[in-house]
Image (cartoon, rainbow, N blue to C red; front, side):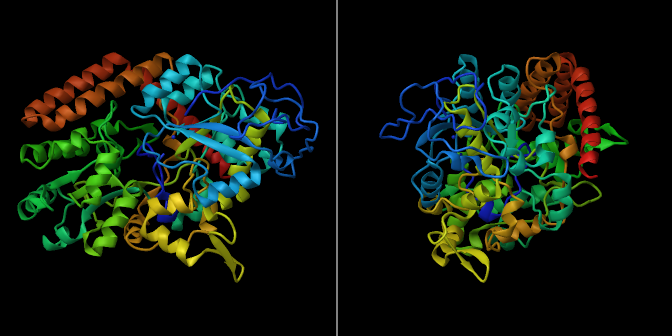
Length: 574
């Protein structure tokens, strides 16, 4: 999830929960009544806690309390309400109300959540919902997803600033001005709020503590048995994979998979794009002009190295077809020797390996490097964050929705999401909030069970603030600590390159989509090609196709947005 298209930079305590969730709901009124009443339409509620009566919602509630910019708006009405919340991540496994933390938040705020996750292809599900106009109350998706712009341009989501003006001025007190400014659209409105976002000032303040999610890892016992080979060079990389397959052909009766990657999608593969380019320290720009990283000679040479690996029988068929659930299962079995992978995505299976045999875990090591063996420039926290959360025009209760969002992004909400309920999941000792010993033990041993029982440590990460949580996060422990520590000092902010890709139905957006889909079809063919000559033919054919698709328009758009970003970020640092 990252720039790497998902720029997630989370410690074990903040990240291992990564696994994620949709449904249609009814309309609302025009929201014209002012923000001094709790316009909830919740005078009557059914036994399930759903809004009763008129599904339009937003009606005056006689007993409503006034709200102000200095007091959390959610306190004005804590009657039961259930919001439908779509997460554009098919792998999210958790349900609200099962664990202690979500039960505590519902008891406190009155808000219950019905998470909806797509069963298959996320983009197909989201596009179907957009086309039918049947968006649920809340929607969370990656900030770079095309659906964000489609929903905004289609007038399908509420401006958060307008909702705050009408129903919850407290939003402006808890929202980070840099983040709202970054996400302000051309019409002056803010439609989405990010999680895991770090402004330039955040980076200045916390950079020593920041880690990256981008890692090259190897199975510890196998790597050490091979004599800890240097895998930074192409020759060393291929030789290590070859030796691993020869020495460890089977893992518990199943074939070893020499190399693991992120899943192949219709637009490519994270591992073989931003991850690999960052390990090679390929620049994003030169002398103020965006650099075409895809054609960088060292990057292309490494893609040919992966092609060579396939020719040598070192790329298993599994990696071209497996999705994340299959990968997690195989990681838990220890079947990969090496992986160019996002470390937080395999925290749960990593813990399972650690519980069985600490020597069978995956450790981060120096991976593919450029000819000069420069240190990698790994993606760290950026201002765009990882995901954005939007409120649908169909939302059943505008007031309660914006107030709940304000609560979630506030320090109070983030503390509740991270620490859980006082006395249940944590205690305060010598003025410091700390997880109870049994809670911390389960967190470090079995993340999946922890999520279901306690639900803290950002099990529900949709609006987590990964800078805020540094004051509560317990010290990292193995097996996560080694991977985190390896990334420190190699982490870079690439905020200026966020939000520069055209999306939507503009000429540039259509061209960019077509180029991405063409690359998605080309990349596996490059790795499966029989020779470097065939590789060159396929790659040059791709370059021709992206040019004819409108590459010049896309690059002009990206350059303009990049220059605008540089100016905007400079303002944030003043």
